[in-house]
Amino acid sequence: MIDLKLYIFSILLGVGFLTIIIYLVRNEHLSLRYALLWLATSLIFLLVACFPPVARGIAYAMGIKAPSNALFLLGIIFILSLLLMLTVGFSRLSERHRELTQRYALLEKEIEILMEKKDRGSI
Figure (cartoon, helix red, strand yellow):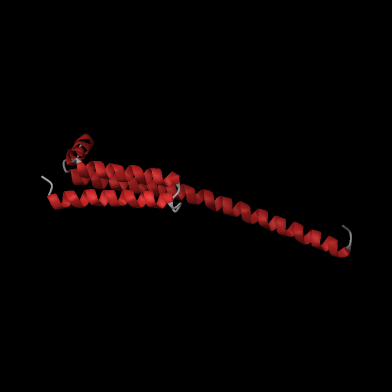
């Protein structure tokens, strides 16, 4: 049986985490794209915290004897998935940054050419 203090702490932690996510979304510090992932995570955490047999059922379905080991495995999978998602986003941003830098350089060169033409009076 789960210790009452741990049970209460887990529920408070889940509610606190959910509250922080909602606060960040409302103040536009966290985009909805990432917020949905974190909201789902906190809701699953709350579900497992409120109903410990759910953790045992998940562990049993995975063929793992200890629910804590199953939760650690799911946590590692979650972190790796999040890392992959952030890496993909970073790659897109890096490519976009390179494109914008090149476009900026071309526009700067065009402005320089136009200024030279203006100074010579050929415009």
